[in-house]
Image 1 (tube, rainbow, N blue to C red):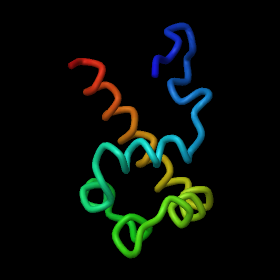
Image 2: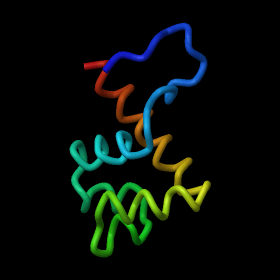
Image 3: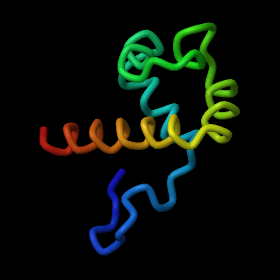
Length: 78
């Protein structure tokens, strides 16, 4: 996926579900839980439970979005 260069928000057009799914595909639940230690990633994880938690918890959502951007930047460099 490419992100338009002239857009100031690199997450523009991406849903939280897309971000979480992409991180799970890249890291898997176990490594994702190690990267961001929150229960929705470490204890019986699912996309549905993660979305429910992240939508109500701004600090956790920010961590997930930051990890997604860092992951995408490292993928783009390759």
